[in-house]
Image (cartoon, rainbow, N blue to C red):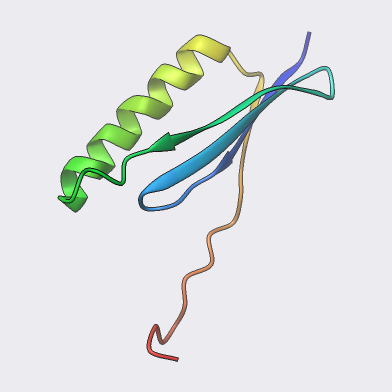
Length: 74
């Protein structure tokens, strides 16, 4: 059985979906918007992702490309 973990990462709320044999199996989000400290939020996100990978045992992980604006004021 092939499992794919798909991640849509963000700085405060990241979404994920798990596909089993090409069919959507589960989806949810990791909401860290209540953590104001960026370093603490990053550490918690890493911990949550490790837990997610440990629970789901994916055979592949797909991460959406992040778009970073060159000039955030425009």
